[in-house]
Amino acid sequence: MCFLMSLILASIIAAIGYLVLVSSGQTEGLIRTGGMIFSVWLFVISVMPLIGGAYVTLSGKCPMGPF
Image 1 (cartoon, rainbow, N blue to C red):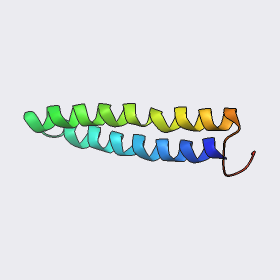
Image 2: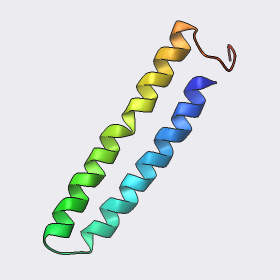
Image 3: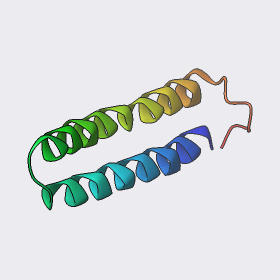
Image 4: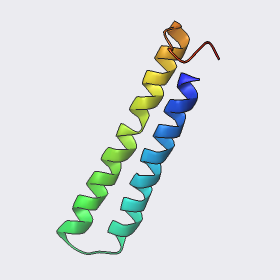
């Protein structure tokens, strides 16, 4: 159950990163560069809940139950 919740969180963060990437692609200059960097940062951050959810699930420390 913990991995499922972390998967949902990671999907939301990745979707926000994709929206930032698309919207920054339509601009010019420094805003475009900043948007690209921010979207890549969001994609990297979206991996963190997956790693944490997998660790908690596989170690058996999930407070939601053994599902």
